[in-house]
Each structure stands twice: as C-alpha cells, then as structure tokens.
Length: 286
Image (tube, rainbow, N blue to C red; front, side, top):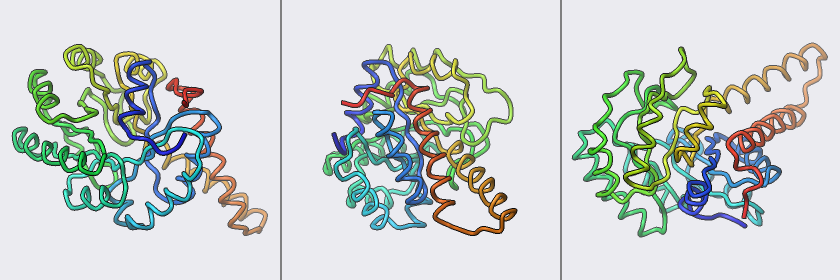
C-alpha cells in the first residue's frame, strides 16, 4: 500500500467500526517514528500537521520529508492539515500535496462557516483531496489555535444541515471533549455521535483524544468515531523521553545526540503501536 486518501482510510474504519490514529507530528523524527509504528502494527495511520508546524518548518520541506518517508510504505497513510482557520495556508498545503484538510471556521457564525466550507470543499476536490469540517470550537488551545472557553453546541439539525450542504467527508462535533490535558474528567455526549451517524452515515473525528480512557475510546469508536486525534500525548511522550535521556546523559557525562534520537524515536514508535492496538486499527492495513 502507499499514500491513499483520507476518505479511503476513514470509510474503511467507519464501516468496520475501528478507529485510526490521527497523530500530529512536528519534526522529522516524529514523522519517521509514527510511520514506523504504523508499519510495525500493520495499521493505517493519518499523519497530521498543525498550522504552526507548517509555518515553522515550511510546507515544501514538510512535504519533501513526507514523500521521502512514505516512498514504498506498506500501510495506508494520509497527510492531513489539522485545525486551519487560514484559507491561504489551506490553499498552500493543497497545492503542495496534502490530501486532506480541516477547515476550522468554528469561530465564525454558522452560515458564514457553511458558505466558506462549501468553497473549501470545492477547492479540495479540484486537487483530489478531502475535507473535515466543524461548526463548534473544541475546547482548548492546540498549537495556537482554539480557545479555552467552551462554545455552545449547535442543535442537531444545524449540524446535519451543515454536513449535507457542505459535502464534508468527516465531521468533528463538540461532545464535551477538549484539546490538551483534561483538568477534570470530561462529561461526554456519546448520544450526539450516535444521533449524527444515524441521520447521516459519515465518519466522525474525535478530537481531544489524549487522556480519554479505554472505555471512552471504545464506546465512541463503536458509535462511528473513525478518526481519533492525538497531539498532546505525543508531545508529552516526546519531551519526557528526551528529559529522561538527557538526565542520564548528564549523570554519565556522555553527550551523543544520535543516541537521544534513537531513544525518543523508539518511544514515539511504541506509542503509535499502542494507539493502533487500543483503537483496533492494528492488523487492518490492506
């Protein structure tokens, strides 16, 4: 297998009711390690980049890394632009080769969000790409996008109308989930996922996955959450692994960067394998 569309990955998962890890990478090491973990787990994976990462590294460099690391890869993979309110960045990434985007216009009035999302869907289709949409902000700030204030949830019919009129391929509802680390146990609206899927059979994206329990993941995936976003957990694992290694390097007075990269990369790879097993995507590559 090789690079495939987001839609192909999430449609498989939605039909079979498993979740695919959608992991936000932020450098070459995390990209390489996430892909290696997916290969070892024989799992599809969605690699995500934030707007901050695109702006920091550059779309050209990021995409060259992606092309080099996915050449001949043996599992289905897709490259997704996460939470992007900036239409110019969406256009840049689509032109460069990202095959899916999340146009995050959740801070706009619903009608304006809908109007612009229709435009983004048309633009994405011209590149053979797909679109994730949302109408409510997911609580929490991730890579400079979002707000800690929880937005009001729209009525079910508003969400369904948005899905039908925009033609988005994946929908991300607010269900009490949050980006970042949960300060208290979230109260999740499981029924909202079921109600949306019952009315419009469409793969659902679960945001704020870092910190949810196995039971919460299993329940939401069974209801139709085919795309499970992970960002904070990777950042925490990456930095904790680095800190642990650097403390031991300081004690031994041995300073070898390749050994640091090897240790951190192995931990990120193991995390990816664990997520694939947890969400049921391990062994599901086609």
